[in-house]
Length: 356
Image (cartoon, rainbow, N blue to C red; front, side, top):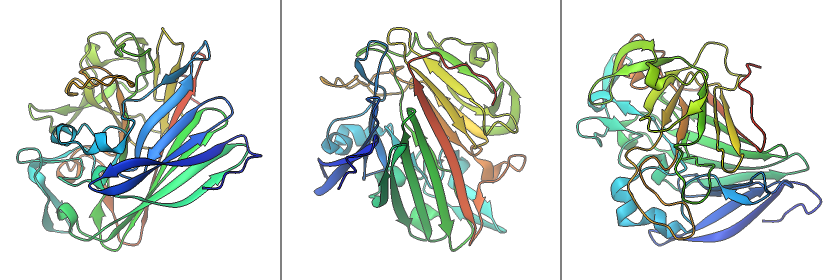
C-alpha cells in the first residue's frame, strides 16, 4: 500500500500468515507519537496496539498473536476468546437461540448449549473481511473493512452489508465506527472485543485502576441470561470511585446513562507504566469482562493468555433484547442504516472521568 510520506500518520501493510490455507494481510496504522494499531483482514481483528509509556518504552496494550496461524490453531478455536475481533451479527447471548421478529419466531444457531452466543458458530470474528478504503494525512490514518453476510447465515434473516472503520488519530485516539444495512428486517448488535492490558510484560490487570460512569447493571440468571431487570450495581461491581480491579470478577453489562455519548464512560490506568485508556461510545450498554475464563497459553514474545490477564470494554446494545420486551430492541429495519461509534483514548497522563 502506498504511504503518504509527508503525513504524520501512516499506513503500512505486510503478510501475516495463513488461515485455512488463505493468506492474511496486516494493516498497521501509526502516528508520530509512536502509537501503532494493527488490524488483520480475518475477523477484522485488532492484533496489536502499541503505546509508549512514561519512559517512552513501547508497551503492547492488547492480548493477541504475532501470526495468523495462532488465531487458526485448534487449541485457540476450541476455546475462542474472540481476541480483538469484531463480534456480530449479535454480540452477547440470545436465550434458547430464538428471537421473535415481525410476528415470527426466528431460530438461530445454538452454539452455547441451547443458547446463541456472539453470532453463532461462524460469527463475524471467523469471517474474511475486505479492505475497501484507506486514508492517511497529518491528523489521522484509517482503514475501512467490509463484510457481506448472506440471508440465513446462523439463522439471521436478510442480506447484510457491514463496515467497520478503524481510525488512529495524531492524539492517540483509536476510533471504531460501525455501519450496516440489510434488505430485510434483522437483528444487529456489533461490538469490538479487544482485551486490554496496559501493564508491563507479565503483569495482570489486578493493579489497574478502574473507573466506570454507569451505576446500573442488567440482572442475569445462572446461565448469564438477562432476567429483564435492571438494578443498581452491587458494591463489588461499583467502580464509580476509581479503585484497583484487584480480585474482582467482572462479567457484567452496565447500562449507560442517557446523553452519555460524548462522555468518558470507562477508564483504566496502569501504575507500573503510567498508561491510561478512556472509553467513549454512543451505544446504550457496555459489557465489562476481566477475562476470568481466558484459557492459559504461554507466549514468548507477547503477554500470555491466562485468567484475569486483561479487561474488555464491549459497547453494544442490550443483551438478549429480542426476548426482553422492556429492553430497547436491536432490530435493523430493511433499508435503514445502523451506526455505532467507540473511541479508545490512550494517554501517558491521568485521564479525568469528567462528563463532556
